[in-house]
Length: 154
Image (cartoon, rainbow, N blue to C red):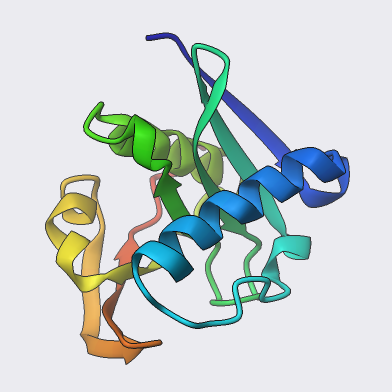
C-alpha cells in the first residue's frame, strides 16, 4: 500500500476535499463514538490539515492547530482513520507525519494533545507524556499529553 501525505490550510482545500474530511470526522467522532458535539469548532480555520491517501484513496486525517488557539503550544487533533482502512498501521504513520510537520513548522515549542484516555499508551510510544488528570470531554475520557520540544539546532 502506497501512502501519500497531503498538507493544506483549510482555505486551500477544495469544497469537496473539506467536505470529505468533515464527513469522515463526523462518521468516527459523532456517529461511531455516539458523541454529540460541535465538530466544526472554529479551529479548522487556524489549522494545517493532513490527509493521508492510501493507493490514492482518502484513508485518514488529522489537523495541527496553530499555537495560541487551543493551547499555548501547537496541537495535533482530530486524528482518525476511516473504518475501511483500519488495522493497517495507518495511525502510527499519520501521527508520526503530524509530529514531524509540527516540529518543523513550530520548532522548540513542543506539542500538546487532548488524547482519548484509552490511547495514552499509543501516544506515549510516540514521545507524549501525560500532564494532569483524566477528564471528561463530551462523555469520553481524555487526558492532556505533551511531547517536549525537540532540540533546535544552533
